[in-house]
Length: 326
Image 1 (cartoon, rainbow, N blue to C red):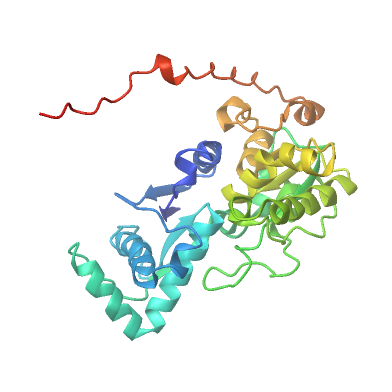
Image 2 (image 1 turned 180 degrees about the vertical axis):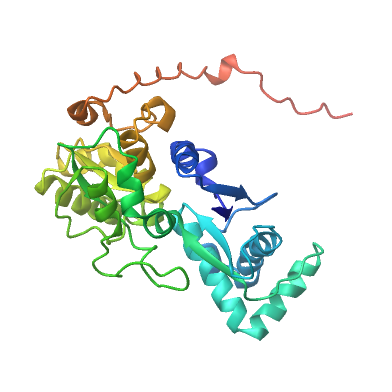
């Protein structure tokens, strides 16, 4: 199966393990992801509130590139896959609005013309990566390839708020009580705990806006997972992974809690069940150590990278010099 593929900025850096594990498991299921040539940022989530024309033009450029792909899908809509939930939202929202709103499309095409591009609505369906695994590959096909089931591992499946709502394109699960990730983890042999907050927001960029609000949101999610004795939180969004992983220590300091719940991507869990090593799947780059949890299923995780050396002081660095006045 061949698809267009938009990795998004996060998978280039802080979510590199998501990209690594996605490519590893895609190969195992003969999924061919053709990355858009010269793609650009989707604009994240707030940009559209600052400059609507620029935001839609930014996304529309990627949509034009996707429609130029030769995917050999016999007249059906071309499929563009986004692993990142924010990218999935922005791409599907722009495709939906620009297809339905001729006035908006006209404004955006004026902007695109500066780069020699033109947007034509329709013919493209934007889908999340999870959708591909549960509906195109299927639970049974995944289960058939499991050689090292995740038996004994208690998983809290975390969807976040963007892939199940507001449902522009690629609708594949219930917006209040999604179950696809639950079923996928069960197909891998894991025990899926009840996780009532699984479709609640992680706070997004609230960590940069209001620390008390952000810490409260993240704390509720971690507390919910801990209440059900989850060994691991499994997610499908780089922002969700970042907030629950990177800010877990901050939440502990803020609320005097003692959470230690690793947060991994669903593609990493698929890879482990298929017998791939933790290193092959980028496991070990997360901040909350996953080794104690994965030891329950006999998975060895590489030692974390040593902390970088202390940055030299300013006096040790060459400083720019102002030119002398003549």
